[in-house]
Image (cartoon, rainbow, N blue to C red; front, side):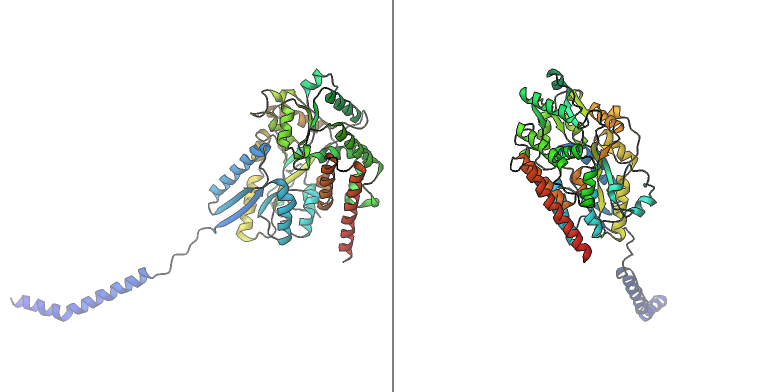
Length: 455
């Protein structure tokens, strides 16, 4: 009994002290664990990259699928990076949106564009990222077939993703049926045009809805009548060269003659390239002049079975027999990056560039997209189908080539070039009037350049 009373007295005397200690300990634990600072977040910075392309046409689908897959794989490997991969009409992107964005300094982070004269203003205004170090550090300098359209003052401002060639495709079955000889000269091409018209066949399928396809006819005739030197003088301002000269007058009159003879598909300026190809694959038109990027439209659901085997491929004919005809083409289409990219975002964009420019991807664009690779890779043309094989054979045989004129001329003069050829197709102006407008535009451009130099 005495022990029990002693225990009660001990609890009464020391229990409150123990309770106090327990409460204080709980408070300390609550403070330490309930109100502690958050653990430092070491996860990578969240990044969003904008990438604009113009692979929205039917013939671009295989290429688009390849690059979409590259972007998806990249995002898997870089979960902190989101790529907004958007497509826009090529003309709107190149002629309107990107130009305005470059003026305001708000272009996408990455974008598809054309090298040469088109990007020179962007280089001068420091809107394009200098990729020289990127190319050297990744051992790419000697991997590309040609970088001259992307190089200014020994610095590289974009990388080509594919090459291109603009041959003349013709329907071998129709030519054989009508007894038409494969033309080697412009005169023989004239004869083929007349025979086809008399047989009720459209000589040339032309879809000029985007305005540039008709330029292919113009620059071939200009090259054939004047040679390659004159356009270079016009581009550089050398020797006070002018568009109003005898050779170009002959070339434009020749184009004017074809227009007057009905050599082109009706309402060409309102016809899309895809619908022009349908005229060719259906046998309504006998020839088609355009880039190798349209080859994949010669097969598949839109073309008759086996049509590829009916297609012959030749260079645009020379002016004189026995002369090796040059072919328009080059490595003009590529990817550029905004110079405003910095830090982690810049590194993310360059990592994506590395994923784009591999031999594996270049091989895929050959076999799946039927595109000419921009990098030096080995491939078997025989496995790409008969049309692509013929294009590559021509590229190997014909060592002379020239860059399409719309990639050589300044953007201001190019705009006039597009307009005057479109107007000629519609019958609104003749060849001499077109050349006069071109010369006026060229003179205004050089006056602007000279006045800027003086300031």
